Amino acid sequence: MTTKANQHIADEICRMADEDQHARTEMARMSSALRAIDAANTATMRALIAQIGWPTRSKVGERAEHRAWLLVQHADADRDFQRSCLELMKRESADEVCRKHIAYLEDRLAVAEGRPQTYGTQLRQTAAGTFEPVAIEDASRVDERRAAVGLEPLSDYRRRQAPAADPNAPR
Image 1 (cartoon, rainbow, N blue to C red):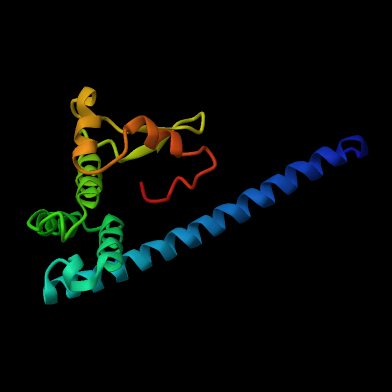
Image 2 (image 1 turned 180 degrees about the horizontal axis):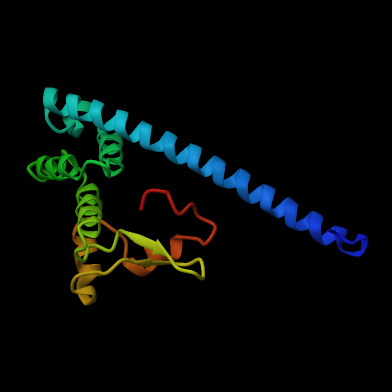
């Protein structure tokens, strides 16, 4: 039984719980929708790659080559597909496939497989809301490796990751 003196507290608790449940329902719905989109995109990319090989710049243009990588980067439910795409990408010249894309996909696979990443592209959000890289192999030389593929220094990359940034954005 709520006393009149505490009614505002009871109302605030109920309002917060309603908001919490609504947000969780929306997040679950969005998560399910994202999984469905990723699965459909993966299936289509698999078919397109079977047809033409990796979508290089000379085959599909720079914009579509970039977008092809992005779709494969998000194919986390099919690591074998990601690995096969990485191998196809590595066979192409830097004129055909952006070296940054290879670095991101290599790191994504390494982190997913519990190995240290090479380029420091995969970040995790800390409790304080900042971003830090997941374990990096030979961290003292990461900026050399990053520079070799055209990535900015790790400190600049981390600084660009604002606390208000979407933690699900491609990294």
